[in-house]
Image (cartoon, rainbow, N blue to C red; front, side, top):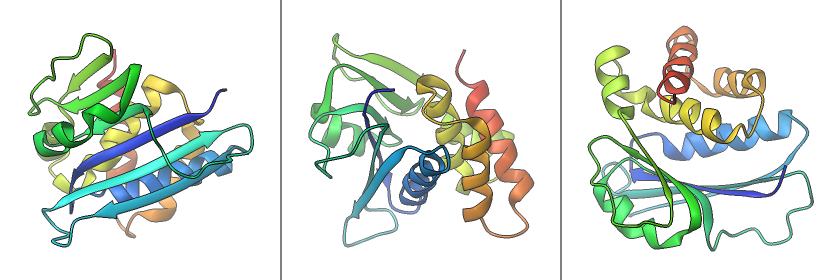
Length: 175
């Protein structure tokens, strides 16, 4: 495994910071090195939010992402703000409601993350877990077992089955 730099972006309240924490914890469960950081606008809920995760088999020397390998954007604002930070040959995962950027040098997955959470699972708050299932299917960053363990450790009691299903639905979005 090489070092992967992942940036999860959207708006406050979409659970992306929790998603970043879960992804880092699952990497640690797999015996990998991981760093996680986050930022969000002063508005918090509804404002821009960003979580960054670095996962590597080697020591992580620099704790910040300059050019990410994978960028997840759940809103147009987030995509427009961070698309320039996605490296050439990188992977962009955007919700189906987000406009496709005009970049020929990246791989784009445009998938219904928010719709899956809202319509199929009937709970908007699991969009972050749907996204994690999709991202992990694309990159195979961590074992499915470790990802599920990290998810179940972080989600509210009583929502374990819903979140387990959100992971599965996220994986199923990637063909």
